Each structure stands twice: as C-alpha cells, then as structure tokens.
Image (cartoon, rainbow, N blue to C red; front, side, top):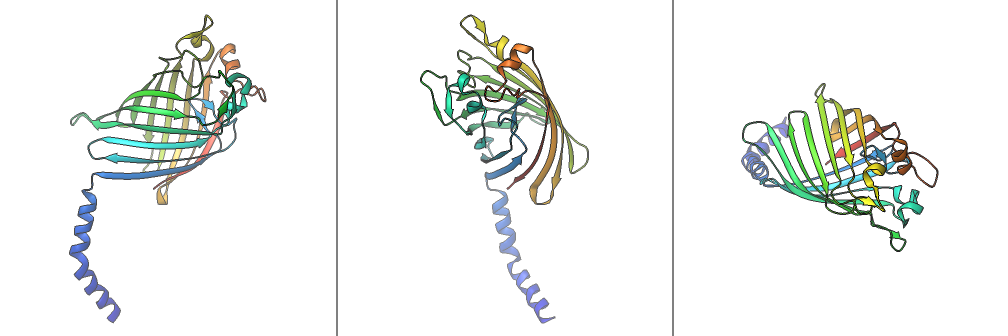
Length: 264
C-alpha cells in the first residue's frame, strides 16, 4: 500500500511536466523514420533485381511539417553483374537511392500530392565505355483514399540504356484495407523507354507493362508481413532484353515474393 501511495504521489507531482513534454514533442515540425525489410527477392517494376535471390533492404527519412522531405534507401542487387557482357559492369552489388520532395493536400478534398526527384545510384566498376546505370527521375503523384497514381520521368540515360532520356513509368496502385490489419495491394505499371541505339528504338527493346497483387498484414511493434504475385507483359524481343546472360534466366516472369518489414 505504501508503495502504491508513493507511486501515486510521484505521478501526481510529475503529471504537469510530463504532459508539457508530450505537448512540446507533439508540436515538433521534424519527423525522423526508418525502415528495414527482408524479402525473398527484390522485384522492381516487375523485374527481379537479385536474380530471384533474397534481399535485405532499409532506409531513413526526414520530413518537415511544411511538407518538405528527404530520404535514402538501399538494397542488395545483382542484375548488373548477372549480365556483364551487356551492362559492362564488372562489380556492383548495391542500389542506393537518394530522394527529396514536397508533399501536401489540396484543401479539404482529401486529395494528396507529392512531387520530387529520385536518384538511383549503383556503385561498382565497369568496362571502359559502358553506360552508367545511375538514373535520375523526376516524379509527381496524386492520391485519394486508398488509390494513387505516380508518374516518373527520366532526366538522362535510364538504368544503363544509352540515349534513353525521357523514359517514363506510370504506377497505378490501390491499397485497400480489408480489416484494420489486413490490406489488399494492387498495382499496374507501364514502363516506356525513349530514344534509340543505332537506329533501333529503345521502346521496341525494353518497354513493357507489369502488375502486382498481394496482401500485407500489420503485426505488433510496427512489423508487417506480406506476400505478393507479380508478372509482366512482353514480346519475345523484350523478354530477351530482360534475360540474364549468366544463367539464361528471364527475370520478368511471374513470381511470388514474401517479406517481413518493420518501421521505426
């Protein structure tokens, strides 16, 4: 009983400072978040970046109450060295993304918007004359309820494809909450390459469509577990373009991915 009374007295004495600290914390315009995830493979726009092997991914983000944000994200990859004869990369095992932009809402409409720049960086060594895989994209997105659309536009050579400035990608997504914890994830994308090499259009070689359907489930402590199915639509020429030279594996075929992630 004495311990209970002492605890109650301490709680009463500290109540005002504690609430004050929480109020000050709540009004801070700065937010820092992080994320980490383990995936059975890394699939980007319908294409396996790890030759269907597991991937460890994670990143950090900073956002300001004004709507401004910056962040970085990284994952292991293998696609550049899986086709060295084509890409010219002798070593490259990491993708590092750096991005920043501004997001907000349009009045009371419930419509959100997001504009920014995203730089994909692929450290590694490559043969003389090989085109760098590093890619800079500008993007603009809108969202409403569980629906979103994002348009990305390349400002230079795109993922190692020469003379491909102006390449774009359209991402249409729906993340529908079935329950408080379970979410249905749907995606449809169009990858459209621009430019040409020696009179052959990049569009005929590398453009395609992709889609995804999956489920994600929120666990305690900000963990999420999920599974999704992904596939692409390509002709035989495009399938050859996305086939690894090292093992003759087509990395745009239908495949499943399971994952466990956490935000903090």
